[in-house]
Length: 480
Image 1: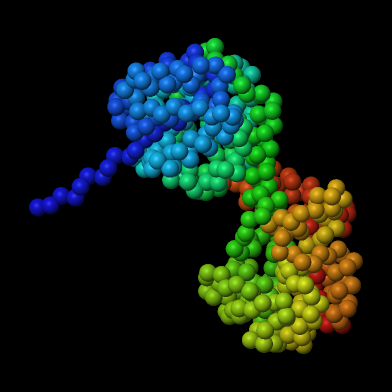
Image 2 (image 1 turned 180 degrees about the vertical axis):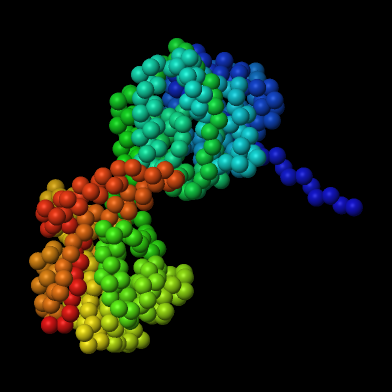
């Protein structure tokens, strides 16, 4: 009878970040539990160009201790985040499975380091954070100053609300990571400052990693704090807001495989769907159908739907009655057919360099009495208008400044295009910012309670000044 070899124990390392920690370093390392000291694969002490004897004390400890210790001194101060980046590159390069971040000033209890490691070695998490807030009242009893406690709670609550996470604390520096999870993050793009800890959480959330928390004791002694509290709060708030905006599609340069369906009745998709739902079942050509999610809703209203798009997304054939893969730059392909009761061009014309060619071709595919349903972004909306006025024009991954847009329309310019193409306007409408995008910023299941209020205010503004607050322009068109 043969036995398969036992799986090798995970290789666990510790990154000790230290700056002017000469008075606390030895005591911090001595507090590591004996069982952990015997099993740890390696410890890297990273002295970030200290102005005291931190490096010399670390070297002396290495010579007299059984701890598998490597001591490095950065000739130039890399910053709190920069020091971690260098340490994590070391962990990845040395093939470790788990790395624990430990501060050399002793603020975080080495005695509980195994509590952070255990969920990782047991495969229950990709990252584990030690939290001083999990046990009610413990942080203040441990000596955390009241102003820091209040600031911690305010910032953590704000960060959870903006990301959809549910962490009891975002600001603990006691952390452990699976090294393969770190390898999946763009660490070199993160801050070198103290907000690095926030950026790494955002990266983990974006990558879909599982983050766990364990309670840790709070200790505040006579260590020197190098964090400027107000600057730190500003930086982490900025990081979270940028992250949220990027997930919503503003200011980002990422790619989106398919346009997100906006099902709200106050969105362009919702309004066009309402027009189609009020019509007798017929044939619909969905130009620029993306993944077919919108077309599937149209089919549910009893229409037969044919989709056309440049890319055939997974599942589009199952959602629609037929699909034609084609580049719309030169107009509609012959395979798309003719005689449609409705042709939908939702957020399409702004993506082609000659929208007049495509719009005339669309009109030619109508059956007698047929109509064209169109939506285009409003370049006169306050967001692109303000960006341009301030000299900050740039492309986003969604919205009026989508990087795929090659033509921009105001209400006046688009209605001139309609007339030039031999069409007349049967009905016009305008919608505000789709509040659905507020949910794009969430990484978890927490709802954004402000969405309803924001939507109500925005819709009121649209009614009052549609050319400034209208996010998208919608039209029902027929041949003139």
